[in-house]
Amino acid sequence: MSEPTEEKPFTVEAARAVVLASGELEALEGPHFRSGRDGGWDSVFLADETHPHPDFARVIITRRGQAPREVAISWADYAEVIEGDDASRAAAEREWIATRGRKPMAIFGSEAERHGYRVTFADVLAPLLGRGTRPAPEGGAPAGRDFASEIAAADSLVTLDEIERDGRAARIFTPDPIGTGMHRALRAKRVELTAAAAGDAWATPAVRVETTLTPAPASSRSARRAPQDHLPPAGNRAARRKKSRGGRR
Image 1: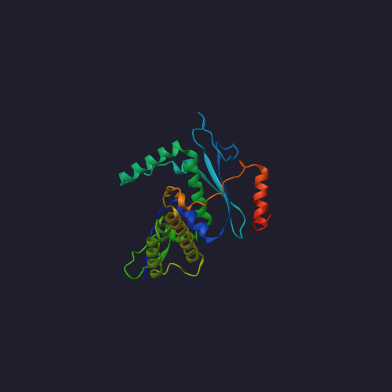
Image 2 (image 1 turned 135 degrees about the horizontal axis):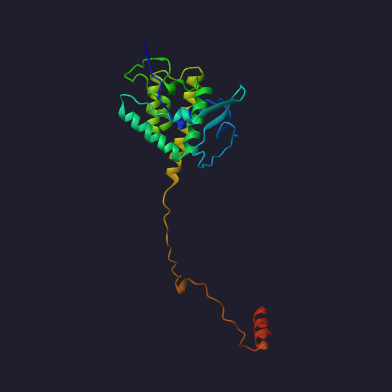
């Protein structure tokens, strides 16, 4: 049995993780910004009295085996508050637009990148978007579960193991670009968490060991022969000669 799902919002970080894991992204240029209809594209934006924010943003995405594709968005399309019965949602949109006005490059640029992924990698991001219909999972897993976002947000190997178990029960790792992309995202996340866990294991505080050296007792020291420089040279030579001859003169 299939159940319809609504398209859900997603962050640019979640989309980027899924797209990179798919191995289909060949190049990404931008974001670039433009003010006014006759202005040129630039990688930075400087606000002034005439243009407090960029009017357009774009990215140029190249998917493997395809020609580069330019995807542009306008500030006006993202600056309208949709008023409705949900007052809290309208208030959140107004707050987001205000934040966007304070950080036009960071936020508007992220929106352009996210829109570019959405246009160019619609099939890869289908589970993230919740588009179309999917089989209801067995074993009590909730329908329409966003496994891609959960994989990207997993913060431990235990959590990732639980996500993988539920994902296999829901049969999300299908032999197609969508399922393959999800599986690659899972493997990439496992490598990341394993490396982080290994780093924590080695990050132990250094222990300083102080050693006190005790001088050896006088009895164990090797005795030195007393120098005979105080004796007359002749006496020294005579004594050595006598010793070498066995006491004979």
